[in-house]
Amino acid sequence: MKVYHGSYMTIDEIDLAKCDIGRDFGQGFYVTKIREQAEIRAQRKGKYYRQTGAVTEFEFNENAFLYFHLKTLRFNGYDDHWLDFVVMNRNTALPQPTHDYDIVEGPVADDKIATRINNYLKGEVSREQFLGELKFAGSTHQICFCTGRSLQMIEKVPGGGNLEWHITRIGEPLVERLMLDAAMNAEKATDVFYTSETFARLADESTGLYQCPWEEIYAMLRAELKI
Image 1 (spheres, rainbow, N blue to C red):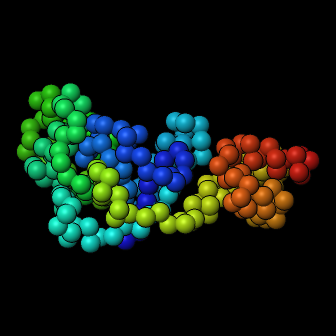
Image 2 (cartoon, rainbow, N blue to C red; image 1 turned 90 degrees about the vertical axis):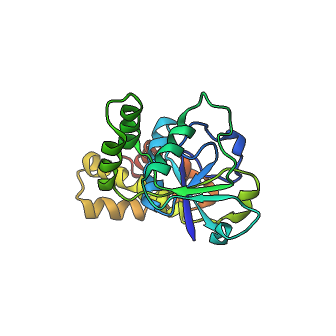
């Protein structure tokens, strides 16, 4: 199964020691089968670190859930068990790690749900009310690889379509600025960008230009076009 990790940079090597504690399923390396979800996280992380963000694609061996030597836990949706598990893991005052599972799969406590969890913990909403609200929550997904041996079940996909994703993200604001600064319509600005020498360099993964902020690439394009 193809899974994705969104961050401020491409992941070449997974280091569990660098993973944050206090997340839904504890400290570990998180991926999702929903690419859009990973892209949103990449944008947020990229903005925080003033980078363009990156989505790294992996191949996950789903037989991991059948292997006897791996201890796994799967949540099919939001329920009492999921809530208790997330609350436990988000409590950073507890000894770490908070559990002994190798792999955990289930839905995400996004920003809105995390806020409601805090309300629940403060006694502002009941457990029944909180779980009732989750029936209307959108579809989310995450898999957490919590141990070194669990990482044997995941392998990075070379390239993984990451370059194309970067070009799309960079191209959209760049074309918009080109329309404003050079008084071009959308079709003309798009054509100018995709036929430019700047684009040729951007599309060459070896240059690493795709990892630069779009403003820096736009400055190169302006210099090339003399505008």
